Image 1 (cartoon, helix red, strand yellow):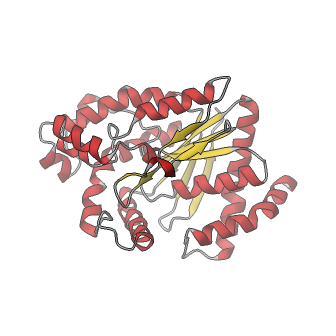
Image 2 (tube, helix red, strand yellow):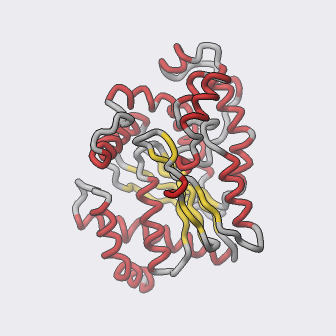
Length: 308
C-alpha cells in the first residue's frame, strides 16, 4: 500500500498533464485520480512483477473494441512504468503496421475488394512485427525503425517520422483492436453478421481469407506475446459511439482532412470489425491475463487479474 501511494504521488502530475493534452474530457479530476489509483497503478505493479519474473524483455498485448481506450491506457502505463519503475518502455500500435494504401489497393484487386479498407487481419504487414520481435530476442540488439500510420491520410508517415528504437526496451506494449484475436470455426463464418458481409461478401471469400490469416501468420505473432490485457466493452453498440467520438477528435486535430470519416462511413467501417470483435469478447474475456470491464460511460467497472 505504501509503495502504491508513493507511485501515485510521483506520477500524478504527469498523468493529469497527459490527460489534458489528449483532451480526455467529461471526467472530473476526482474520477481521473481515482482511475489512476484503482486501475492504472495496480496494473503497472502487476506488469513490473511479470517483468521481474521473466527477467527479459516482456511483451504485452493490449486489445479491445474500437474507441475503448487502448491507446490512452498504453500511454498511461508507459508514464507510470517509466517514471516510477524506471523501465525502458516501447508502445506501438498494430495500426502502425498497416500495409500502405498502395499495397492495400493491390490486394483489393488481386484478392478481394474489401481488403482495400484497413483493419482486418490481412491488411497489416506481419513481417515487420515479426522482424521487430525477433530483434528484441537476439543477444545483440540492433537499432530498428518501425512505421507510424497516419489515419487521417489512411497511409504511413514518411520514413523520417518513423519510430527509432536505439536501445532494447525492457517492456513492449503492442496495442490494437485485434491483438490476440483467435480464428473462428469454418462453420461459424457462413452466416453473415451484418449487411456488409451479406451483400459485399456473398461468396464468403473475404471472411475465409481473414480467418485463414488469423489461423496462420497472426497466430504465430500472438504466440510470442507473454500476456494479454483485454478491455471488454459493454456491447458492440458502444464501439460505434466511441469510434464516432474518436473520429471527431481526429477531425479537430487534422482540420477536416478528406480522409476523416463521416457518420455513415464510420457506421459502415465498424462492420469490418464486428465479427472479430464479438468473437474476442467471448474468447479473451476468459483467456486474457488481465480483463478490464468498462461501463457504458467509459469508466472502469472492474479489473480482473488471472494467475498465468
